Amino acid sequence: MKKIKKLCMTNPNAVICPGLSGKSRTQKRMATECIGPGMAAPKNTPAEIIDKLNKEINAGLADSKIKARLADLGGAPIPMTPADFGKLIADETEKWGKVIRAANIKAE
Image (cartoon, rainbow, N blue to C red; front, side, top):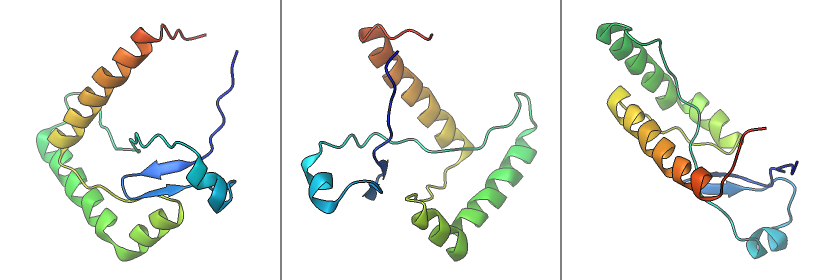
């Protein structure tokens, strides 16, 4: 079984490579595909609860202290609506599903 080693973290605005010098960093071809964490709720959660959670989570992501901490970790908040996040998950599932099938990748 091959092991995957994390070299860098990427987001749409930055590439963070803690273990690589600047010269090595620029010589590497970087994959900039990125999807970060998100929040989910059980199916059939009432829309008013989803909307309230979304409003409060996005308010937290707008806080300057939270933005600074995420930046320290190499991240950047991307507030979304529940519909936008659902579309992102569906699109990413389709895109990476094609890659997995084309490469014949199997779970062990």
